[in-house]
Image 1 (tube, rainbow over the protein chains, first blue to last red):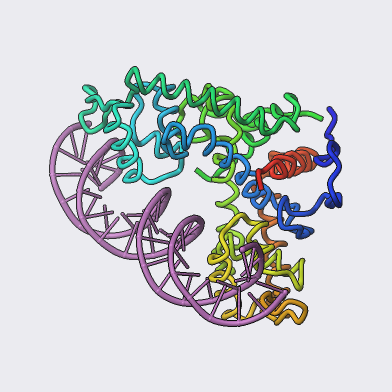
Image 2 (image 1 turned 30 degrees about the vertical axis):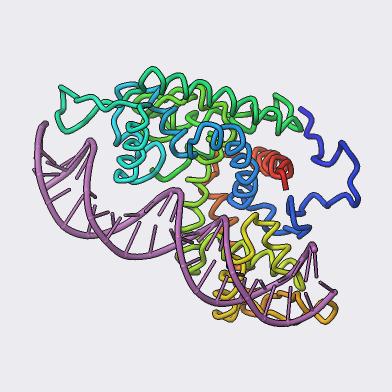
Length: 169
Length: 169
DNA sequence: TATTGTTATACTCTATAACTATA
DNA sequence: TATAGTTATAGAGTATAACAATA
C-alpha cells in the first residue's frame, strides 16, 4: 500500500508541514498523535459533506439519517437497542423517532411478545429515502475524498470500526 | 501490515459480524461504508478516553484542551487563526479563552503591529497543564486501544489527517 | 470598506429526573 | 425489582446579530 502525502498533488503557496492544522496554519506537534483530536478534525470534513449531500437536500440531521438507516436495516428492532448502538439516552431516541414518524418515514408497531417494547420499521417512503440518502452520501464522500484511494478508504473504515469496538459499553 | 480482526482475541458468546454496530447488536450494512458514520462511532470511544484521562481529572472540556494545546504550541497566535483551525465561530473562541484566562492558563497580549489583534500564549502553569494532559491522554489512548498496533495507529492518524485536509475551508 | 475581537441572544443537541406500563 | 418507553426540564455547546476599534 502506498500512503501518498496529502499535499503531493497541486502545488500550494507554501507547502504546509505534515503536522499543521488543516486550516489556520497552526502547528499541531504533540496534538498530532492524539486520535481524538484527529478524529474531531476529520469530522469537520465529513459533516461538511453530509450537510451538502444529505442534510440540506433531504432535511435530515446526522442523527436522523443514522436512525433512519439503522431502523431500515434492522426492521423490528427496539428503541433501547438503537440507544445502545448510538450511545445516546432513551429520551432522545423517543424525540428523534417522533420526528421521523411525523414525517411518515418510520412506524412504531406493538411487540406482541413484550408489551412494553415496540418494533420499529421504516415505511415505504422511509426506506426509499434511506437508500437515496446513503447513495448521495457515498458518492459525495468518494468525490470529496478522492485524494484517498479505494484501498486507503477501506483500511480507514476497518481501523475506525476497530476503534469503535473498543468502547467501554 | 496485518489487520487483525477486532474479535480475534477472547471468545465472545456470539461472534458479531464485521458490519455490526459496536453496541446494540444491530447490523450496519450500507452504513458501514460511510466514513462520517464510522467517524462518529469511533468518537464515542475516544471521547470516553478523554473524559476519564483528562476531562474529569483536569476539569477540561475537549474544546478547552484543544485550545490550550494549540495556544501552547503556537505562542503569539491570534483568535482568528484558532477559529479557522477548529472551525468554530469567533464569539465561541472568545468565551473559551475567557475561561482559560480566568483559570490563569493563558494570557492575551496586545499586538503592537496590529492593534486590533491580540497575541495568545500559555502561562507557565498553562504550559505545564497542557503537557501533563497530553501525556495522560496519549497513555490512555495507547492502553484503551491496545488492540491497534503502533503501525495501525500511525496509519490511522495519517489517513485521518489526510481526510481533515480535504475540508472546504 | 474589511478585519479583529467582543457582547448579547437564540438555537440545537443531549442529559437527568420523574413517571407509566409491563415483565 | 428491573426494564421499555414517555414527558418535562435543565444543561452543554454552537451559531447569529449587532457593535467597537483598527486597518
